[in-house]
Length: 339
Image (cartoon, rainbow, N blue to C red; front, side):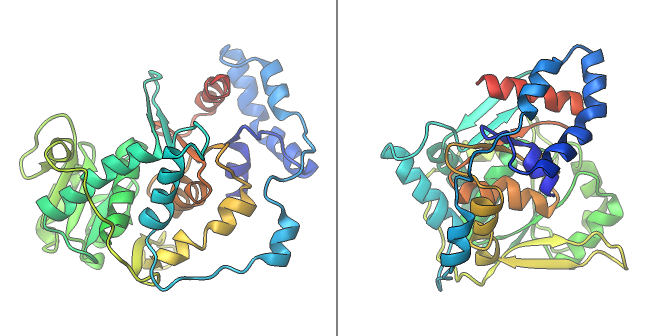
């Protein structure tokens, strides 16, 4: 986990510990040789990126050890108490000009969304879930989407409505999906054309599922079109008032021993607990662009693609990369740094 984080932090590329620097260089050395053969990256740029810096942390660790004392409020909703606060600062000119979410695909088509725009789109999606689909606070939503902007919108929409999000990876089999839906009692499933047919094959065994939403440019029988529905609702939505200890998300374990088991997290355990990660482990500020390459189905995506960076007002960067490819990563580094 630490290597992934340290490797993919922009605008503060240097590291402060020699052992991490050596390990990072060793980790990419083989990939670099292959990339150079293909002419996708120049060695001089790699060496410049690997140069050792000795700058002090932006968020002082010593003061943390001395002063850190997180206080958990009785009521807490990350969308209202964190994201909307950054939206307000953004409107008042009190935040950097970086977007909240910056997404790029292989064709270099990009989506940049400010915290204000993130709020507008997520409020529309929240209204789809509540008003159109009649889902209520506490209902469970099963989500399987690749690294596309809508994945982040569903996350925020569930926070706003108080629905419990259950992320899954696109690597799931029919058996995996059936187990997760039956065990969780999820009422809603959101996915794209890749997984929709698989989910349809197990739907009859999962009576709790009453709503199926598809991210697609075309219609599919039995599925509501997510993009189309978002265009028909208002962007006016008020976050539900949640206790900080109420369920927020459920991840399934890997199933090393027996079937995968549900692990539940509350609004404060991630929304507040990951303050330590964002501020002190990742050392993020609103001046940073942060890229986490983890699949959207793993808990790492919540830690480092949602909560930790946005707690700090940092920009979350994402690339629609179906599977990890070192050459692609090096090219994207170059593109982002030039920006």
